[in-house]
Image (cartoon, rainbow, N blue to C red; front, side, top):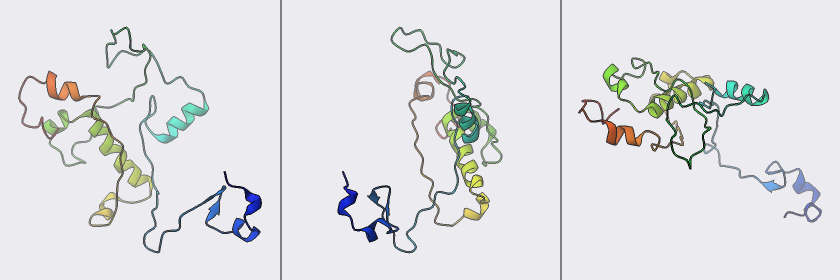
Amino acid sequence: MLNLDEIEEKELFNANFQYGRWLSSPSAGEEVVISGMSGRFPGSDNVYEFRDNLFNKTELVTENETRYKNNHPDLPKRSAHIDNINKLDAGYFGLYYRQADHCNPELKVLMETVIEAIMDAGVNPIELEGSKTGVFIGFSYADVENTALVEMTKWQQFSITG
């Protein structure tokens, strides 16, 4: 624990010392800027709708079995789901419609939210072509793995890329 009595007064007003800890100062040209956000959340199509649902104390966890039939006694009956997971403007992303039909729903949402985050930052996605721009994503394939690898019995031309 940091004892503020032991720190000289001039250090407390140092720009790199905030909230009881030292902040790093990257060298010029090495700064990182987070300027746009996007996301899908239970019962919320974007971060602002999610914020409003939280502030309004909206119940986002339900016993909805429209996507999964829960017959296992050890699994909770209530869960949270995001909406519109199968919608995608394939033409916008340069995908064949058949490829988009076989596309992992999580990938569809991922592509949409990346574009939304870029637009939220006030940037036209076309302007990023050839630039030093990074997109950092947390992603899990486990939700649809069984469908993609086991339940698909008919060979499809776009099943691997989808």
